[in-house]
Length: 436
Picture 1 (tube, rainbow, N blue to C red):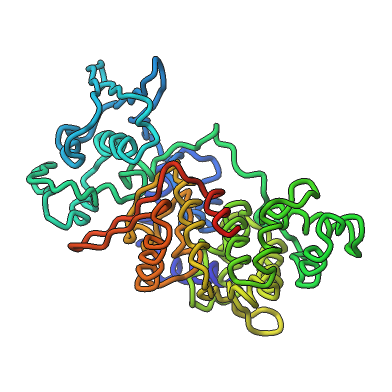
Picture 2 (cartoon, rainbow, N blue to C red; picture 1 turned 135 degrees about the vertical axis):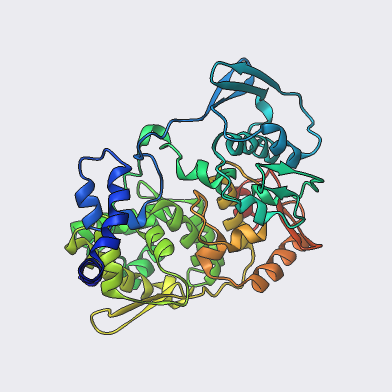
């Protein structure tokens, strides 16, 4: 009850000040459950502005006739300024005025290229920019100025102003749900009280697919263990996968094997992702504080306790003992800590980079500074956030990867700029083949 107690003390001590801000939250939405949302602290973890009142959609993409069309409604800034950040374009585009804005069209084949994404970001900035000045700060050459409205002069095309989530923080904040608002069918309490044990994992790797017809687990245990193995990419419907074969070949108790498994778990399981998002590396977390965060997100008391116990069980597997994903202390798990992973094979980092790029809608070019900024909410999981590497460690590993695997990655660290470029004709599966 730590969070609730602290909120209560603040309310009693500063009733007028607290009500001033609570009333702003209350007035910004028509949500009928707003009082519950406020009382359980849901506003503290808000990750989008979908329910904010008077929030019209200003940027809409459609495909037709071999082109991608962007409709911009009531633009906030001038696209002619933002387009300066891209330099010369290798394609033609059209702009047709509409009653409430304009429609931009450009060749569909550029849609998923790095340049195409930056081009779309120009119009996201145009549609939503409110002059927060993050782009101005990002520009290392001082070419962006908001003092008298947006003005970009002598642009060097470093494109650091595009190194914000979705190109514009305001656009990202108001982003509409994808896939019709559907979410992963994957409970935050995925493992209940039956997270995997080391002996289950050893038995599985010893027996392969025969494990499922020759084990001693109970019905709930085997069901949850199958979920773990599926999320790890080791089985599909009780059939072992090529990743299983790869892990067997490089060693089931190597940090490389468990680095690959952790990457898959992070992308396929919301509980593992929650640990990564809410537990900073090398920072001890009081169990009750983490449980309070879960309860503020709508998780029951029982499930919150199970999620904490599951973390302890996971750290007793090679995730903790070999990869060093995390530790706990106290008989009843009083503190939980995510620790910096031990990773000697930099091909695992390359796999993580490709998974990151693919999750970010095939965004194959980005900066190290973007990866180091673990506060950015993104569909892709930064390897820095995943493994806890420091900047100097990342630079060493990235330079090593660029030298050893130029067909997959090229990195540049010069003149205060950094750029990581992955090959668009390669995939994360291609990286796994490098282990063969």
